[in-house]
Image 1 (cartoon, rainbow, N blue to C red):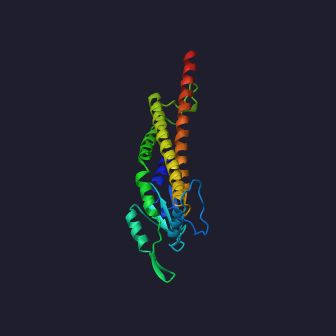
Image 2 (cartoon, rainbow, N blue to C red):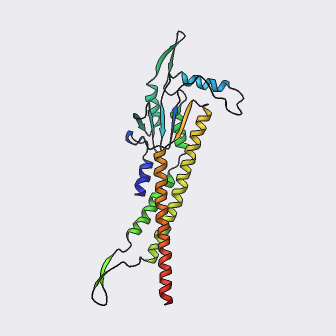
Image 3 (tube, helix red, strand yellow):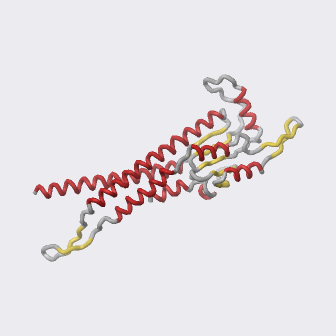
Length: 258
């Protein structure tokens, strides 16, 4: 189950049906007459210029979602076009240019005036790293395969010739190997998901700040939930196996003392 969660997380934004599984989304805000003044701002002209460029897009509602291996672009919450090639999405977006007339002057505007697709691609190429998740999948698969080899319940006859159900203790080397595998998988998974969460949140906040509020950034809830649930399940399995090993060791020690 854990590997399935991680696989879905990695496949986010690779197809239209996976557009809800994304690390971060960027979306143009509705044009506002008031531009917020940020602490430490020296020259407000840049903020006005950015907002003017955003308004020129005729109140675009373009939203860009980025995953580990793909990017999705859409004008609403339900219709997205996804691809793992940012150039293809950029060409489709440029094809949606409109011509507006302001003060008897015709101007051609694009639905993505601040290049959110480019920002999403830079985030995916330079900040997102999925290598640790692949390592987590492989090591956790090894650990759970070793757990599946543990002996199960079976019937045996005791001294009075009656049938009883018994379950032998698992092999000590196999138990330690499974515990080691799941513990390593938990550490790799925890680092990867924490890295994913911090980077997505920081990039979304920084993009919103650098565009002076013209763009809103959000962290993908489904991707974060999948990541943390997967790590939590691996952690629970590793902890449970460690407690089992300690309990069996203590029980054997008590039997030997008798």
